[in-house]
Length: 126
Image (cartoon, rainbow, N blue to C red):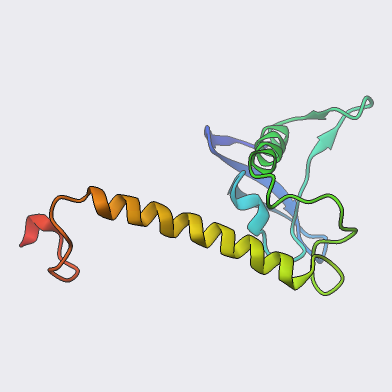
């Protein structure tokens, strides 16, 4: 029986590329980073509604895709290379994400009262 550890992580059945079933510890954000060929098993009833513990993971994963619509495109037949997204589009998405991270880091650095000049030591060890 699948056991939910706490609100963000699940122990779920997964099928690998050799069709062997194993347990994996995963959350909704990590579901995109499964090893090649791994698939989480979600059970559906006669009305095509998901049930069981894996339906919560599926709902969380779909929610994370819905939040960031810049990275979720439905116009490609296949997302993986070489037949999937154009390399230029993937680079543009990565650049957009990188710019946002750099902008946020600059804002955080401006808020620091004492600049970080002492190497890798924390302020309490100086």
